[in-house]
Length: 611
Image (cartoon, rainbow, N blue to C red; front, top):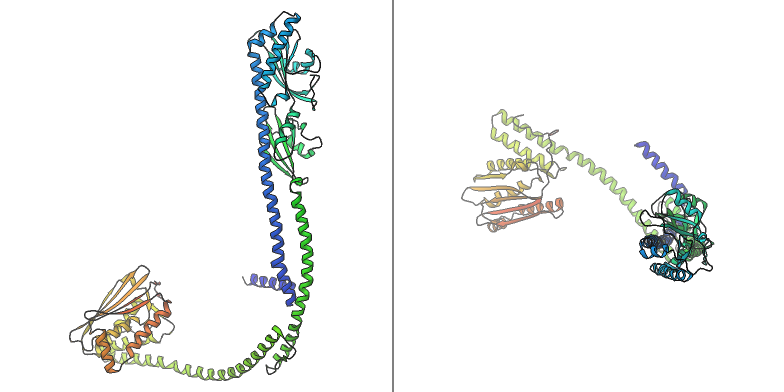
């Protein structure tokens, strides 16, 4: 512990060596450290909090938007499947596509009916109908569409060999393909499409036709985001991480992010690219095993805040520079007179404060300081003179105190000798009186103790009562109603003895009957109630007797007791005298203080008879 304290003290000394010693530097660094630095940190923190709040708000909005895109894509995917099944199970399409008559009139009528029904089915996917194209091919190679192609289509223009081969290999009658748009006779900004290829058949019969539903997902995605409140870039990625579509041709994803998105994951994720200051949100499109990525550039949103921050830093730097210059000028004008004053004070100290400062050229606070210093030197010089005199007086008083300390010990030793002489002479009453008086003297002379145990205080009361009963001729008795559990409660020393003495001297001096004193102690929560009741002549008669006898000692004793209670318990104790029909009741309430008994090291200056 000593080594650690030395090391800690050494570190404090080392730190102090780096601190400035002059007051102007201390004031400057104090203002800089406790005003400007916290202000700078607080302002930067405010900007950071604003950026964080904006980032959270934008992130919430972008998450909401990308979830809407995902829900719309899944809904469209489900609708396309539903429509394909509806066409396959519709008996009208079965009848139209299995008709054998190939006359021109019948073929044109059938084409009009089929294409009108396909257009009707497509219109139910509104507003997505403009991005969806239905095409039917019957067994004769006739093509029927839900749209108006730019040229006459053949079966090979609709059915791709890749799709037919995949269906043949997998044995499925319905597959999804991501492929080139091909020559389907529509105008599109994208060269690729999402196609649903389905073989139409009923039961185990031979297929009666083929259905291809083409979805221009690129145009659909760009139209979806036009109405979003927060503009951002969107990307469609396949399972291999290849970009299928993007909402802006100039938008791009860093290679490290594309590599990260190639890892299989079916959870929504959020990333923040600190290099490009981009917020990325990823949604997994389970129906196609694709990923939808939104990219939000924070620079375009919080660019003004960054500019404000830079402007603030420039302004703050200029302000600090001006502050340093002005502060040094002001502090130098203040500290220069103080330095001169310091040198003059040093000279006065070396002259034992018998010199004074010259205040003719001083003004303002420095003049007031110099005048105060002159007054202080005069007072200090007078104090020096008084201290020298007081030191001599203290030496004399200390010598007298050493002599006075011998008197109580001499008195107790003499009393102890008288007690043993009485024992040898078989004067038991005198021995008991000496023992009781010794207890009272020992307690009263012990000035280091203000509180004693209840059991010790009762012993002192019994000792005092024994002496008093031997001294006075009128009879009286003392009844102790104290619970033994209160033996180690602390009470003021000689407080009960004073109350008992007051009852005896004031109550029993003119009492014809036998006197009685009842001592009660009761625990009241966190308080101790002390009551001393007598059957004496009462308060009024006792006051008259005191006036006639011109005695004030007992009045002083009760006043002293009240003052002791006030000093010991700081206003938490109370004391009162109450006149009864016969006698007086003294009541005191003090805080309940319980102490452990002290068993070792006890001694007595006057030995007991048993010793």
